[in-house]
Picture 1 (tube, one colour):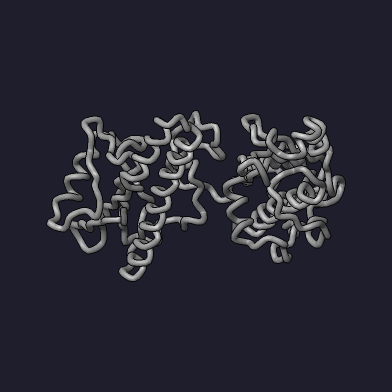
Picture 2: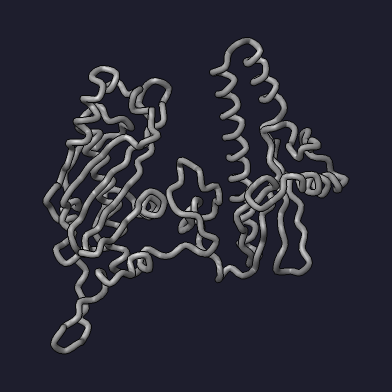
Length: 349
């Protein structure tokens, strides 16, 4: 069902847009048919597919609204819905009443049950806030969804929940070990030249590096000036219907003054990952493959800047079955770490 919205405002500068999206009753009926036929795998696939359709429609609606708002000097805020944290799902009925108050009918069926749930169940009523204070907002590319989600038990959490604005990478690294060196005799601050060039040519486009640095990378400075880096890789197997893969990359770097030497590297499946057991290599040799992945340590002992210009195979494989795919992923991880630390040095993160 296409998006439907109504605009309401008490002034010319603020308001909201009400959006309704649905995957339609046909998908729900088909899923139930597969369940009754004793085909649970197909049932669950349709359920997940319906959720993906709803998310796609909401994203499309948000993109269209952003285009409209920009031409009116406004900005669109991330959507919220009844049933999300701090919003009682019982208020779903009130929003539905607003949607159906217009003489123009909705393009498809949408009802609210006594529980507040919607029917068809793969549907969503979303509220997009509008504001004219565009100078007070962070760009969407700089936001980390986990920082605005209060579901703390989530096994996929990549950042702590906080209500305030996220700190920049530069502020996150405001530690004494990273301050300018101090001349003990004169007491004057001596500015350290950057050890990582932020203008280097990466093999990955900077937009992707910026997103990975914000969403997948955690950098923890230590008291001795060293840095622990944790990168979460998320992909899929090349076969077996593309099973999800989650691997954790641990990198220990020496102090900035030494050029961030790579002291240790380790890659292992994440604690909650089961997808690695469906890789062809794992099916053939079992944990021997995981042991081989754990022994990979390209550029160990080299300064972090050695990743720039490092000649390595290009592999699009999402799995870890061969050396080329593993080395390729290590290149992506180390370039992301280099980008994050180089941007921190220039204060542009």
